[in-house]
Length: 400
Ligand SMILES: *Cc1c(COP(=O)(O)O)cnc(C)c1O
Image (cartoon, rainbow, N blue to C red):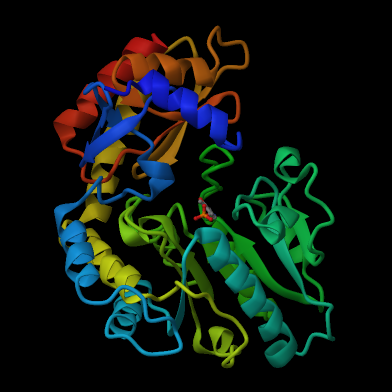
């Protein structure tokens, strides 16, 4: 039998080194559990960066995949298919927006939002040609394309990849006054994450989204919210904006939109924003395929029918409460919302976040560090309370 060691060795020889995975080869998965090649079981506490909110291989979503795969998988947007209209209608009903545009990856959806905001800036707001700017936040993560890293403040995301796309202004995160001060006549949009996931689960002050909503409305600037990681029940509401009852002008979703089965993302907006696109302006061969749309419809149905937002809210409350009780000498802070949580280690902690993740793996739990000192805990939202308590036991053992 081919061992995990053989597979890792082959992969290391032929794969570009743009990731540093933990040394586990996952061969099978179900719900919150995965099994390696040797048959050892682990709990998945990363959920593919929140793409697996519905759990691995959810039977209802897998069935939708199989049923549609037997009928038709790809039509391209040169022709209509039966699934696109219903999918977008169901998505729009969930996020209270008016028009939607499907894409594949999150980064592509961000690119789409940037293009829509710029064209809206010229056509509707009246910004002079090629002058439109978009304000973004320090510590943001919006993907890895050239334009997405052009708005990043993270040196490693950018080094060696210039020249960059112009037209972005970076302001501090969580500071509404900084937004008000940065807006000028060329500002088309403000793009923001409700919680910065990749930056280490940074939660802004209460009232931040309400304040930036008000500023954007007053100044005729689009509020574009990147809910690729926070959306679709992860933080205890369907969308993280819902915690403050804020409706953005543009909402970007991805990751859990397909329950981790296919890359499916989308931009949803007010009618006048995506309304600027005309035939030929934008597109993608695979986006909106009947296969992707059928899978996404099932993924959304699971979120709704299994009350995943309420589950995330209740279980998250319990999880953070128990983490706070640990009273670990390593822990500087516990933070998060719903089931998107993180532990920040003290600067002088005797273990790095990476070492903690290696120890957790030995205990049967898969986590990933963000930066050097933060461990993110984001299990599938279908996790059973008893399994979450088992996870807390493992975490307590490693952080003791
Ligand atoms: C993951 C992520 C993206 C990028 O999505 P990809 O599918 O990896 O391109 C963008 N924004 C946020 C907030 C994310 O978490």
